[in-house]
Image (cartoon, rainbow, N blue to C red; front, side, top):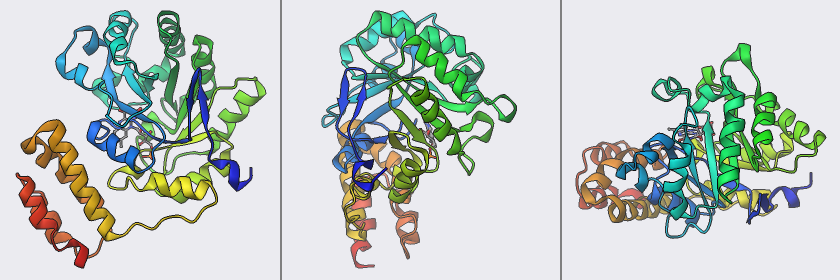
Length: 332
Ligand SMILES: Cc1cc2nc3c(=O)[nH]c(=O)nc-3n(C[C@H](O)[C@H](O)[C@H](O)COP(=O)(O)O)c2cc1C
């Protein structure tokens, strides 16, 4: 594939997304402020944190808030998780007023609290369930469905092609493979060869759904490497976007054959304060200041001589504390 066409639009059922550099769903991170910032920095598409279908059916207020669209989010997906179809129809009724563009199904979460209900990566052990889930959604809504899954439950039961086929049988409009088994968690290294195999499978069987890859995308250059090595249609930045929303515009530049913009300390400083403002708008000052601690440490990762700033922000309880702590940052 030539450099020029590595960056391109993608079609998810009836939805055209202008580019193929997405922000992955990240529980505890991809709230409205973080998604807003990633979109400002070039993310083409974004996902909510995972939302429990059962929680939705119970109309829990906390669960409902997770589905809100960010103000600058022209297109977005709500990600659902479920271990059965019991609450799915009620959940879809709760979801409809949010007018999301895509519904994504989480088949990758390795957390025991989730897998013990048969949800997340435990769905890898039950391909028939993903067929049923996708079919119920496509039969009862006009919203295209994407499925995000792993290469298998563990090394002895890798089944990404069988699982992909099960999702396609239900009518899935997009596949995203996190190229690790559940038992690998998030450990290095993701097995990108599984992405090549999946894309080849879809091509051979004339499925025109976009295939996206996730796993070990930490730098903009990784996106180019993944697309070139595997032939898949797009990438999803996850941990690589935390403290580094600039990775989207960088990746888009590289994929378009343009010069990659460099990230300066001043840009990091500005992004932290913008992120803090967005957090305060959404959660109020107290909660924002707590949530921003982990983000700020991520923004400063690898920036020399910032340990005193990190020490100050992990105790910050007011926006002013951040402003004071960060004052020296541009001059370092
Ligand atoms: C803190 C954290 C939270 C995550 N939450 C979700 C989630 O809610 N839904 C999901 O499908 N994947 C979730 N993931 C998986 C990521 O979307 C991604 O597939 C994974 O991190 C692999 O990409 P990476 O190696 O580039 O980080 C999460 C990962 C992390 C580290």
